[in-house]
Image (cartoon, rainbow, N blue to C red; front, side, top):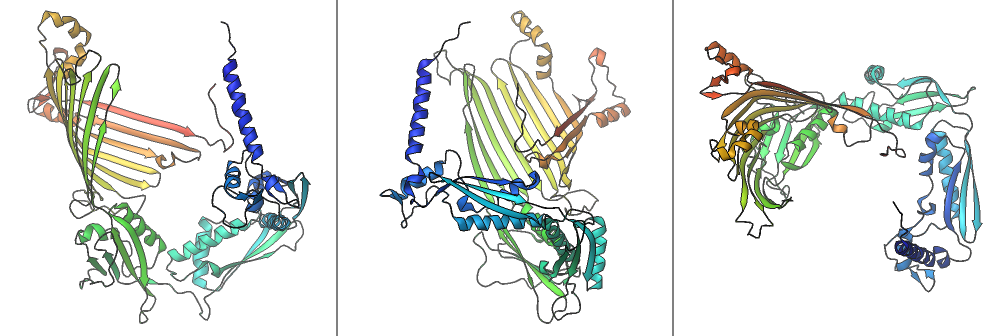
Length: 603
């Protein structure tokens, strides 16, 4: 095979490249600055552990960070913010990004911040020097680090004045801590431990506990590059200990509409089981809403229950804003009174969609209308009703597309999703772990017709329970999955002219002409589906088991209705044959993060 050189394409490429180079050169920032100024073209940090190199670059002042190689944002800035060969000092338009002009003060600030960053990572003796090289108004900035030895935590001491706080901290420390003897000293680890202590105390009833109560003293005046750390938890000022708080009466208030609350509120007079429920919108029943309030009167205050209430109220998908405040009357002792304010969102919507598919000499259109009500029975039940229809026609025969319609499809479906597990004789916990549980009722009818070939009717109904065991573990149980299919052929199967078509598609035609039912159950479990859009390393698993016909087979056997598949005698229920099968499915994947700068490419 002979290869040809496309000279015309090559000339165009070089012309475009030359134009870009001329444009960029013509818009060079150096011609707009004063003679004593320079543009920062390069910044480097030397002699830093690679684990901290990228983070250290973030401590360089933004105004002296060099732009990208092309610097299109700087070019745009130069086009709109220069006048008479100089940068404007007033009426600056917020377009593009100004060039990084060298500023020795910012270089010194950056040097000090990099030095302090290294100290925060355990290099207490770190020193950083800066050097600036300028040539033709272009500056290179170099930071040279002398980290010195890295310090490790030698001993940890505790000064916790409140005995009960000390007890809670020590109990939690045994399970998880960010501060351990022998570890490399790191300010971030100390900060994480402070946040962990804050969360633990908030979960133990300490409503007023704040992060500044937790302090550290670090003694690095030791030999062998070691430091002693003292963790201090102070008591509140002028108090002998921290106070634990309990939940008082809870108020749940729903705004009249999506606009929010009026200036004056008429609260409900009735209080039931420590909760006052006031629905100013008159659209929500009490129990389905307060079921997901986990701030109960008499219980100790726990920030976990507060966050759980936030999460579940939002997951009801009927409120656009959820706010939890606390009242603290002067006459109450160690009690807080939650006020949960809920602003509803739009309840109903209707969506119309159309599609025009083209495929191998055919054209068609599909039109659907979907109505959604997120509060069908005033309990945050989501109801969805869809009607969908479509036609498919042949083209290219010289006829109108409506004169050669060979396929028609129509479907109607309804789904009702209830935000709880509706289990008979069983009281399920209202979604404390993982996520919101759901009970889903689904039914649909599907009709399909292919001209002069077949028509098919399918009725489907199911009951499904969905619940989340934890953030990464999902369960779906369908104890009832009913399917009824019937239809027929639209041509004469006895006609000898159709014998070839019958032999070619015998099995498929047999199914199309059959009337049967399916009654089964299904279970699905998935692991780590929530991580599929992340860059983490993990194992994804999804497994399901679909069983059908076993209970019907048992029932028909007991009644003496026996099947003989060899003679095409099928077991029936109500005079209809039923399907019996077991279908397992497994999806197992291993995801490995190769890092931001690494990837696998097909060969």
